[in-house]
Length: 380
Image (cartoon, rainbow, N blue to C red; front, top):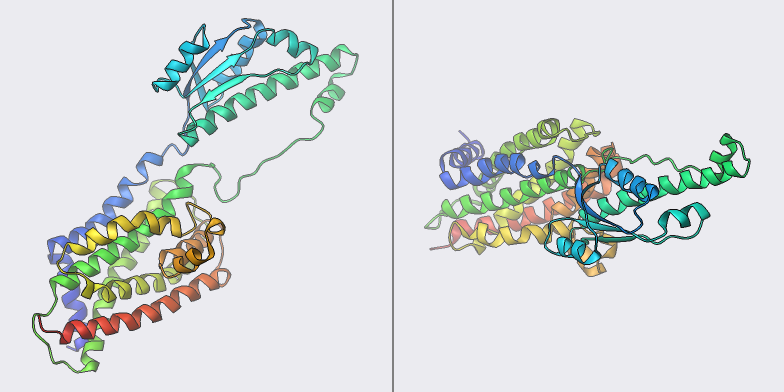
């Protein structure tokens, strides 16, 4: 058996038999795919508890409260007589927002005067703030439109014309690429791609230290190169299986939209995996013991996520940071993969990101070769 295939077989055997490597490279990848999307199954918060302080007490104010409660964003859980009591409920976390309806609400609405409603929402949780704000806004808009149409009808304007006058232009919203406008469709695919990168980096480093030669091997450069490529093929085979599971089975399990061509997605992540494997091999000389890759790389997950431009727009980052982010494989990988999987782009449409990943593969491949030869010739 050639050095290449023997090295591939031995590395696969190490992945499956070494308890720590199996936990990182197989167990963690599967557990994360099942655990991480679960909190986001509801996509957006619904029925956020809201308390009402109705100072007007009229039929119109009660109708407004019913409209707010009928929406899916907020649920009216209590009526309180004073704003102070309602704010205390908000501060202790019993409710997510407080709606205050002022005196003379019905009278001013019928006269067409301007009305100011008070909405105190917990903006420290942005999704809760957004849901309650939209629910109240939609209810007020519906009530205002009905009041305006009633005034037009009282002035002798026919029903159809009154409806057109109170709403001369309609806005039709069609969300693209995220039909449910939910959080799971937005955050799960890029985070799972980051999970693949981090577990692969940690697993390569863990096994690299565990199998580190204690004495110089004295192998010629050709055999060392074949052995490095054999190890690379072993990791690539395992993670291409993960890719099929992550990209085609997980979206079906969690009902995530997927528009990309399967072959384009697999071809796109090929240089991503290669660049990550070579980067992991290049970092092996840095580690002093097996657990060190996990200790060093796990805290970098959140910075890598922000550098990818998914959680925070890359256009808002300083130019040096944007250039530095291109050296992290997930930065071009997430940008290109989301365009393929969510927007239906082809491989030609993401050629810039794909080319960047191949450049990283070449650069980290050279670094991995230098580290691999150093590990093989160093005396411990």
